[in-house]
Image (cartoon, rainbow, N blue to C red; front, side, top):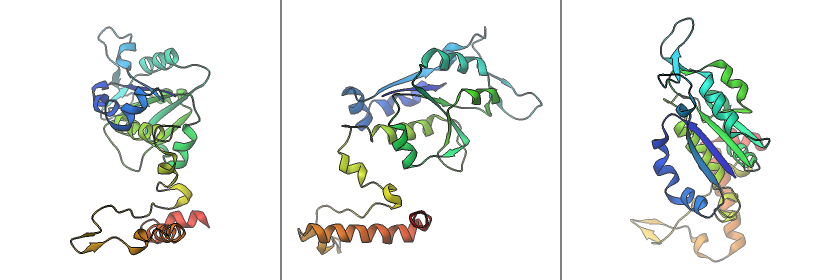
Length: 223
């Protein structure tokens, strides 16, 4: 998979692509991640990519020209273009799984007050990571890139993500490690029993219990 992220702040991604699972996925050839400064595509003699919005209002608006030129330069017939915006579809694990099927993603990070409305015509999807507003799309783009890359074949053990929260509309079960007794808080006996079927049943019961307490809306989806 190839992921091109269009941003005005490429240095924000330095740690993101050089640490942990993302770095290993890049080094092993599971994914190619390119951080593209779309300011390089501007034709403005002063290197500008934004201007005041028509009709007045606060803040600066991203111009369409640099982003159009960047997307048109990078895309091919198999590209899916994603626009990060608070007005987009709320992101979830099912969307993450669906995006792993794509061979090439272009993710556009908005910034400033917003972007020229015509930029929306480039997008195949508009995605939001929640009902709140950030200063730009950089952090959301990292979040969805991380969520996609970890699901790619061979990046992590398949069992790890099959048991993740939100699979089957359930939150994940509690996990424990050594010591067995820490400050009076003990590991449940069933996890020490070695009885795999009892452990499986306990984990499912805990998933349902935790989801009922914390995210009952997910249980409603299960019917």
